Image 1 (tube, one colour):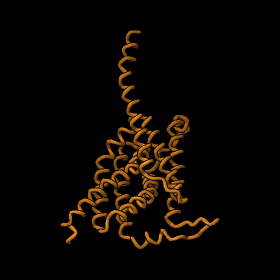
Image 2 (cartoon, rainbow, N blue to C red):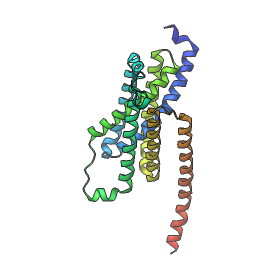
Image 3 (cartoon, rainbow, N blue to C red):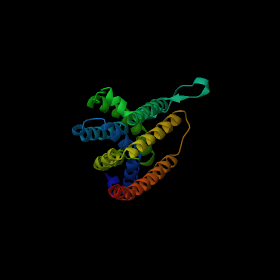
Image 4 (cartoon, rainbow, N blue to C red):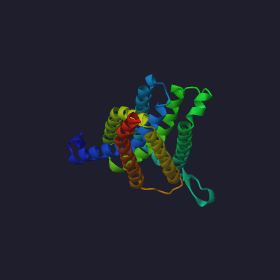
Length: 245
């Protein structure tokens, strides 16, 4: 237990927890968008189950270091390009995320036609299954980062638990904000397209630095916040003109 009194351990825990929270932003967005398809009474439960499932997945992967090491070994090499188990998981997850985000964007923009056709409400079980599939992909990236930053499994597990606790606290306000503003929801789905593309590129061995992706996402959010602020200021003017007319 000497590692508990080592200052480097606590520095690693703080750094890794912050990084896990940043890497979990895309997971929160995905879960919030999917949970919005459920009845209001089930949405909070779906977010909690999804995030707790992500925590369990990450912890199990942390205790499966030998299996993770085997995932990076090449399985086959078509046209001279080797593919490992990790590459296949990233490819499958990226393609799924691209397809799911595209479908959700279409559903949000063409929702009136779907509702008119009597589209059934999504089931809780099917959405949790979709969340768990993407949890594996997101967790793989997060766990590999954690292994590279810390030596003690206990530190990595503690960082995951802390990060999921923060995400559980933040998921409600984020989901409410996204659901209240349709443009934010489309922007969030666009982020999922970007993340899906980066996963596919990673699966083909083309690494895209996360900083570029998060900068693009952050800048887009900044511009959209300016748009929302401008719209809020313009609403009283439009209301006053209507009353005058």
